[in-house]
Structure formats: structure tokens, C-alpha cells
Length: 272
Image (cartoon, one colour):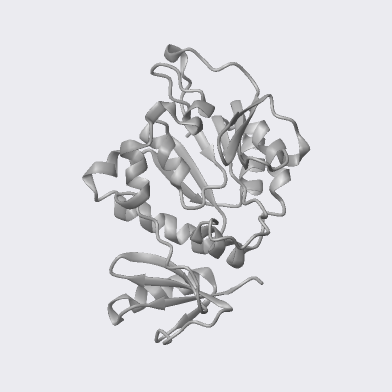
């Protein structure tokens, strides 16, 4: 079941902005917040703490927000292992070399934030309007937080469909050192282990049925490699065998290598 999206303001102070956003997203705006959201709806809610996404129905998970300055995301920044993380090793950081990265399936921006903490310039693409709204809000609020403002300054968000963006970039000859793909994998379980945001996203957006088409497009704009994040037991994206993989307990990174990474002193400029 794909849910119906509505926009709600938590107080009169936010009504104008919320109504404008509803118009931009071409979804319904509710003048008053209902006592309880029905199970077939998910609400994009604007309040004092910014935007959040709340699924309706009994037993629904709590609201999903983007906050780079606190919680699990900030904890990962401070204690996540730095260059030793598999996700960073997959990028190929060497010495002072920092690749430019295109995250074509940005979602809530958590992986892009990890790349940026290590000094990478990151372009983020998000096609889902509701998710884009959450991510833009988190980036805007985070730039007022001294501890993460510099990191977020290396992240540039665009509302774009990955297939269209990649095809246009290839036609223009635009490249990034690394293209990163993390398409939503169609889990069929309702296990509590599935993160609440993934449960909401799957209900709201459905599966990424066109995910396999991303790999050949990403290959055309990757200067050195394409990195694909997958569940550990998932098939290769597009049934294309990677050059090698970095495996963890629950997931892996499949690497498709186009050329050797440059020496630290030879890093090319990021795309404009």
C-alpha cells in the first residue's frame, strides 16, 4: 500500500510556509491537525523543530527527521571510526586525496554526511519530494550549528531524479571521482529490525523498481569508481558482478572500478 501524503502545520505560525510547501509538492494541506492520522496517510509536519514525517495508524513508528547536529548521526561523526569505516574505505581515500562524490540516492543524507566529515565534496540527489524536504530542512538548520556547519558546507543538495540527472551529466561530459548508489532494496519483512524511516519510506514511495538502470548510467559519469551499497545477501545490482566487495555483518559495498585512483597530489577538481 502506497500512502497518501498530506502537509500539516503544528501551529498558526507555520501555516503559510506549510501551505506553500504543500502547493510546491502538489499535495493536500490540512488547516488543522487531526487528532489521529488514519493508517493510509503520512504527514509532512512543520513545527518549531523543522520538518518531520509521521506515518498514521495504530502502532506507527515515531516521526522521522533529519538532524545532523545530534543523535545517532552526530555520534557517528564523533565516534564512528573515521577512515577505518568500510564506507570510507570503499571511496578510496589515500593520504590527503579526497574524491568528489555524487550520491545519486541520498535519502536522509546520512552516508553523504559521513563522506563530508572526511573532507569530500558531495553532491546529493533526492527525487522524492517529501524526503527532499526533510533533507533540505536538516541541511539548513545544521548550518547554524558550529560543530557541523563546516561539514555541511561540503554537501550540495539537488532535487532530481537520478536517471535523468545522470543521463544529462553524461551528455554534458560532467564527471565525479566516485558515484555512490544505495537504492532501496525490496525487503519483504515487517521485522522490528527494519529502521522506522525505511518502513515509512517503503510505504510512502514503494520499492526502487528502476534501481538496476542506475548502474550503467553511474558508470558513465564516474571518473574512477562506482560504489553500490547492498544488503549482505542481496543480488548484484543489475546482475553485474563487481570488481570486488567490502563486506560487513549486515551489508556490503560493491565496487565497480573504472580507473586507478590518483595520487594525493593529483586530485582533479570537483565538477562545477
